[in-house]
Image (cartoon, rainbow, N blue to C red; front, side, top):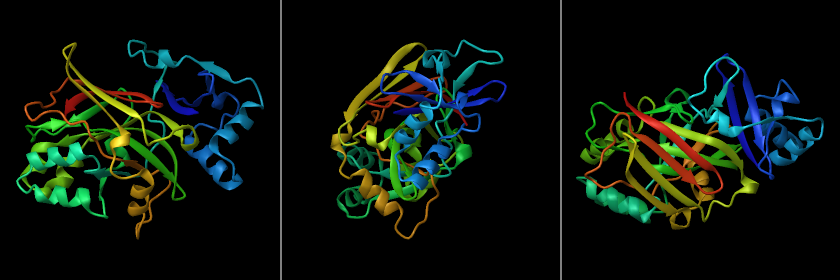
Amino acid sequence: MRYYSLISNDGDSRLIVENRQSIALDLTSLDPDLTDLSDLLLAASLSGMSVDEITDLILETGDADRFDLGETMDRSRDGDGYYRLDRPFEPPEVWAAGVTYKTSEMERQRESETPDVYASVFTADRPEVFLKATPDRCVGPFDAVGIRGDSDWSVPEPELAFVLHRGEIVGYTIGNDMSSRSIEGQNPLYLPQAKLFDRCCSIGPCFVTAEDLDPTNLDISCSIVREGQEVWSDQTSTSLMARTCEELADWLQRHNLVPDLTTVLTGTAIVPPPEFTLREGDVVTITIEGIGSLENEVIEV
């Protein structure tokens, strides 16, 4: 099942599940205290049941209100009582893995003044894993993502993301790893500045439970629209990943305790060409099979 978080202009939060019949049902209408995905994950962990099994039991307790998810994506609507998509959950930490696709290795070598370090990571047992964002730096669907004002080469990085709870992968979402290729290319030691800045990450539009998604062969696409015209697009598949999600989760948690709902971006194979850079006002849309589409406008930060 897919889980969405909605918020109204007057601050009301709703937890929505899209069931197997593609009907969006308001779980909060059945239990006013149930407004956050973390509540379901905790209940599942304590009971030994899956999140979807817990949800099925809740839905059996009454007639849940229905939501039109299309209306939540209509940004022309406004006013009290109107609900919009929020982040599906608040990640306490967002981590990212680099050079997990051959394309990424090749592009990093091309941009870098020290290309051998990327080839070494791609073939090594230990992956490149780094802290990507804090909660305040991570935005949701239709929010603005940032490009650094001191970078002349900025790109989105469309990525499958997995979510951890009690050390296990419990679900997936879409992540946009906004990056300054010019800063990272100058020196790999500048990676934190190339990756971690205001509005450097977006996640959404929903959370899909692990039992409902096979992460090993998903189509991923990305398009960038500028002034109403598509200026770049590409696509790939998670089948080209050189590492599994389980492998990345294992390495991240070695000697490193991460909090529940920590989210991990798994790397990208979609990289715009060197002559392309994002501009303020561009709209980035990332679509992953089985999850949906994550759309964000770009602003300079």
